[in-house]
Length: 105
Image 1: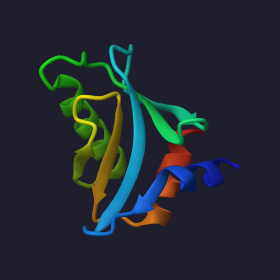
Image 2: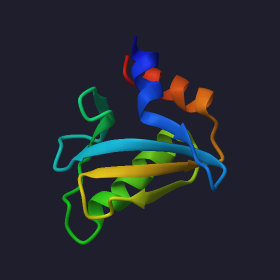
Image 3: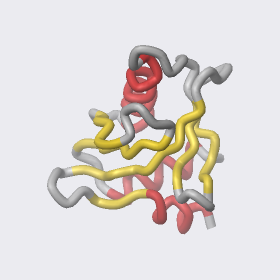
């Protein structure tokens, strides 16, 4: 069930080598973590410690996801929104699906 949900929120990038992930960010959390999947919005929900001031939350998101996926991360849309699309550079779909499913357990 979890893998089916994960596959709805990730897709292969058409123009670059990598995987796009639709995320929803909750800033000002006690700790940075992957919280779950918002089925209605089809987004991965991520809590971030940083406040959404002067790009701090975006930097924290990239640092946090780089640590989890062990790949370079780029925010490709939603820089000023809580809903973003993240590119995991050089990743494949199976690899990202496995990592997210492990984080959700």
